[in-house]
Length: 121
Ligand code: FES
Image 1 (cartoon, rainbow, N blue to C red):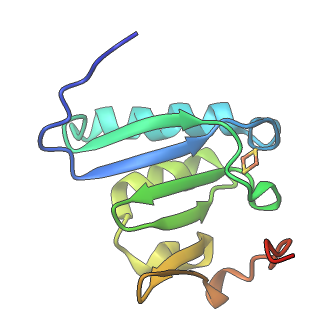
Image 2: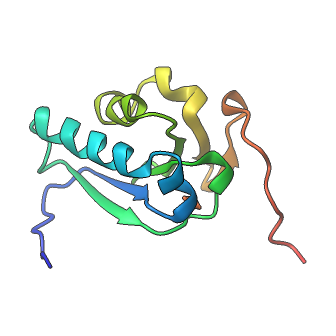
């Protein structure tokens, strides 16, 4: 158990470690993201958290970046490393399945993600 001093943190990456994401390389993605953060000396700027299922299993492995609110489909450790390096670059556009637009989660047409099951009853 650790209690980090998070003062100065600029980004928080939530890395899905739910069962679907773990079957699609979630552990390797987690290790790659954390290794890239260390390699670039960004430990004080980028905090990571392993999560359980985030409800987008078809997009596994999911990595969510806050405060931006971008949800990424990470299908290889290299894409995980790229998120750390290029979080604000357009090169990740096809991996960004959801993003906040005008304060509302919106699917990113460039990612061609499935719509998913509606929460409306
Ligand atoms: S297990 Fe990762 S989104 Fe469901």
